[in-house]
Length: 181
Image (cartoon, rainbow, N blue to C red; front, side, top):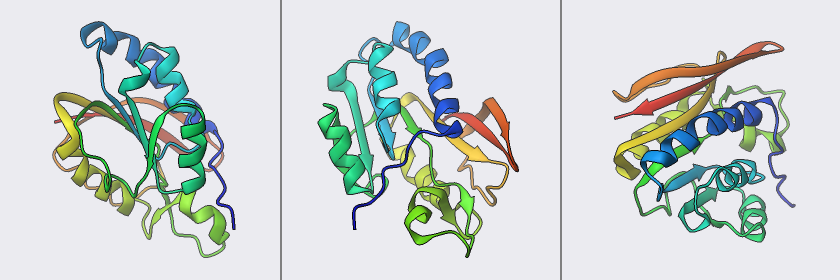
């Protein structure tokens, strides 16, 4: 069975808009900015970072979905098949993650759960990410993380967090957070 690549939806466009706003300012201070996306999916955020001026050699990504990894490599990006930070070695100035953030739903088809379900409460995968991200963030690095009003039990791990954007859709609200150590 071929795994489906997560196609950009409202959450992806919220992330893209935040990158368009934040990356040019960050690049002024750090022209050699190192950028990592956890869960690259279709590569839309990698392409956005490149268009905004992040050097291709400084753009890294991973995805648990082998098909997404292959797709991003075809686009010319350094992308590895990895469960969160499992195969990530370096430190980055920017780490972005549009995670699976919905609570478990027994009616959801198995093939879409990998891209949408963050655990029983929705926050379990985010908690693993936040715990491990500290080891891969530069001293002044930032995380851009997307969550939902449906995501429960997030352990923010003492990060300084700031809600920088949000959008209401159907039955939920999506939030973009900027986290620093």
